[in-house]
Amino acid sequence: MLKQLQVHRQILFDLTSIYLDPMPGAYARLAYVAGLRGPGSQLYSHPVLSQKYPVERVSESLYSCHEELFEKLLELPLATLEQHLHQYFASFPETQDLSPHLCADLTISWIPIQAPDYLKQLYRSNQAALCALLQRRKPTAHSNT
Image (cartoon, rainbow, N blue to C red; front, top):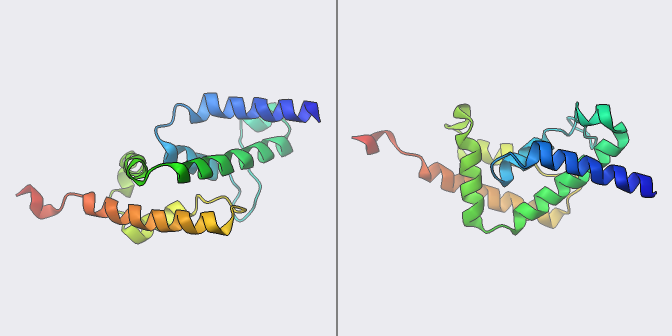
């Protein structure tokens, strides 16, 4: 059991120090870890970490990291979340014209599968509001004239 705990801690250390710390903002980290989950499954994988550590331990560690990132994001003030979400989408030119509906749909895909329903509802509500705020932040064509 102690060996498993040590492996879990080392996976999280590697994940955090190498991959997550350099990322700008809470949404970039959440989207990254959510993207490591297999489509329609609860299994996570990471090509580099899975070469160094047992695949099952990597999946378990990534899942616990995903949950923690999700819960910590919900603790942030909405103004901070708005800044982080704006920063996330600003880094992808192809997302500049996302409608509030598509923005919310995309960010909803970042919810951990086994998150409690009340946290999922809070997150969905926050995302709907934040995506609408981001839409209002966009400069309109006539504002440049």
